[in-house]
Structures are given as structure tokens and as C-alpha cells.
Amino acid sequence: MEYKVTMPILSDTMDKGKIVKWYVSVGDIVKKGDKLVEVESDKATMDIENYENGVVKKILANVGDEVPVKSVIAIIEKSGQEPSSQVSSSKKPSSQVLSSKKPSSEEIDIDKLINELTSSSEQSISGNASPVAKKKAKEYNIDIEKLQNENALPKPAHEKDINEFLLNRYFTKKAAKLINEYNLDINEFKLNHKIRETEVLNYIKTNNIAKTIKLNANQLAVIKNVENSLTKPIFFIFEEIEIEKKEGIKLTAILIKALANAMQKNPLTRSVLKDNSLLTYPASNISVAVSRNDGLYMAVIKKAEEKTLNEINEWLKEIKTKRLTIEDLTNSTFGLSNLGMFNIKRFSALINDKDSGIMAVGSLIDGKIKVTFTFDHRIINGVEAAKFVNDFKNEIKGIK
Image (tube, rainbow, N blue to C red; front, side, top):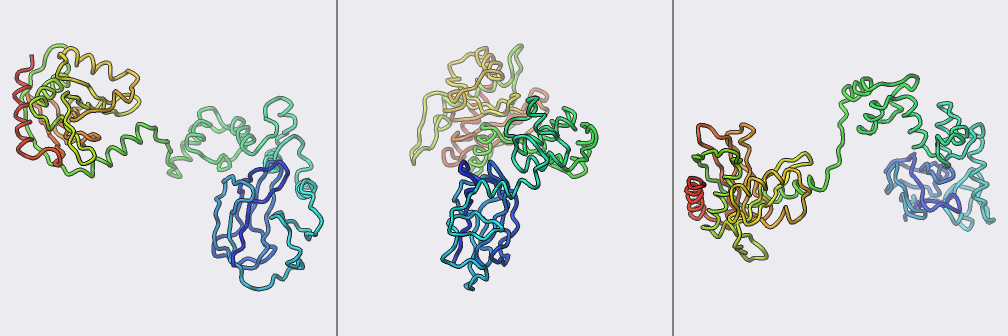
């Protein structure tokens, strides 16, 4: 038999409670009356006791979780023994609210009970605040009422407000910024002096604490794209190609133009797979790896075969700073990545999204570049790829 421990209703305004501390772990043997968990409501913090002899089978809420009232937070596997408590089964309370007093058939005055349990430990702290906040304020000799009168603390004040006050009191702005960036517990520091950035940095280094940065939507999209690319059957062609620089024109612009012209002669490079069909488009839409201050993007230049070198050159400048839309990042069929400007001689690149292939370009050395072509073998076979590469080599020679 299972006994489900639920989030109790500690006040008439409480709709959820916060798990402050678990006194038990899964597998612990518990008796009736044992403390199970400490819960914080909008008015008080209380220990919730156990009502059945048994073993803790599951704990369903973590410390810090805010759980709606009446939701199950733990499961006790009953031992099958009669509880030794003085409370008979016919007199079990209707709610999970427990106290040191014996429940009776009379309705329990929740607010009165909470006040009785909390007033003794917080009677010396004035001000509108949660019990946890008052406890912490007392520990650090903080006058909640005075600060609230000065609008330095909100009403009611919670633990996070006291922590914020302590942060401003004991840490410089740069040190406080590090505390927030590394999600550090200020209680790890001795709060008896002004703590500077250096002290926090030393703590971070000594304890080898990682800085957590939440990935943005573009970074998550890049990860998904890379993972998807690894599932494709691919093959490579390695080439060394002669290319001539042109005054005022980026090398990438010349590569795009030659690539676009070669794609016009090789329809499969303008194709993608979709729903067991091969879709071949008329335009040479090329995804180009663009590194910007806000991340790496595969920006798509549309109908590149119709654009002049100067137009492609201007597109490359514009795409570095413009506000990108979905239209700027979709509907390509072949890709280009150039790391030559970073003195990388040769590398290979992952195929972008649904593209049929990609060319990875190294640095220009003695009028030549090393190029690695990667092809999706489901769309393009070796012979077709070889023909495409030769067409590209011819096109690059003819770019004016």
C-alpha cells in the first residue's frame, strides 16, 4: 500500500509551496511523526511530518521547486503495521498539515497554528517578511522594517530580497556581477567586509567553478543542424585550385560567383531530398558561413547566378551586420565555408541543413587555394561530383 504525501495548504491564500529541505531520502525507513520535508508558503515555513510507518519510495519534488497545493511530493510504501500513534484511523486529519498537537475532529485554525509555530523564533524581527527572510535578517542584523520604510526592501520581503541586500552591502559591483554570472552562494564568503572582484575570482578558480551561459536560439539551431549533418552519408573530393584576386572584391565573392555558375550546369547541386522525392530548383541559392558578433550563421544568397561580382561583394558586407530573417537563412541547396582569412590551409565542413553539399576553402597561397568538397551521397554520386568540381574549376578561371 502506498501513502501519498501532498503539498499541504498552509494558509487560505496559499496556492503553491516551495520545497526548502528534505529530511529523508528514498529508501529511508520512516515512522509516524518523523519530519519529512520543510515547506515554505507565502506566510510561513513548516516541517511536514509523516503519517504512516513505512519506507520512502519516491521523492517527486526537488529542493527549490515550487509545487501547487495538493500535488504529490513523495510516496511512502506502508509497512503494513498499525501505527503506534495515538491517532486512530477514524480520526485521521483531512489535510497534510501536521503539528506537534494531536489533530482533532474540530477544524484546525491554520493561521493560528502557523503563528504559534513561527512567532517565537521571529518575534524580535519586525517588518513584513517571510519566516526564512526574517531568520536570515536576524543572522545578519538587518532591520527589515527600517529598510522597508526606506523602500530599500519590498513588502513582503523574501529570502531572495535579503540575499540581494547582502550582495549590495558586502560586494563591489564587479564582484556582485561575478556572483550572479557564476550563480554563487554568497554564504560561501565571510560577510564581514567589502568583497572585491579579485576575491570572488580566486574563489572561482580555487573551486574550479564553471560559468554557465544559456544558449540562444541560433546556437541551439546550429547544434541541431550539426547533429543532423552527421547522419548524412557523405564523401569528399580534395582539390587545389588556382584563383586570381581582384581589386576591391572579396575572394569569397569570386568563389560564390563561380560556384553559382557551376551549379547551373549541375542540377543535382540545386536539389534537396524531401518526403522520398528529389526537388530540383532553378536558382543557385548558396548558404555561406558568416561569423558575426552574435554568432555563426549560414546566410543564404539567393539567385547568385544572376548577380554581378559587385552585387555579391555588397551582399557579403551587408550580411555581416543586417538583422537576419528566416528568409535570409533558408532555401539553399549548396554551401560554402571559407576559413582562408584565418590562415587555415585546408579543412572540411559539415553540410548545412538539407543542402546537397558544401565546399570548404583554405587560405590563398601562391595563387592557389585548397578546397574540400563534401557531398551528400544520397543526392550526388562520385561521377556527378567530379563533373561539378571540374565545372567549378573552369568557372573560377573565367570570372571577370
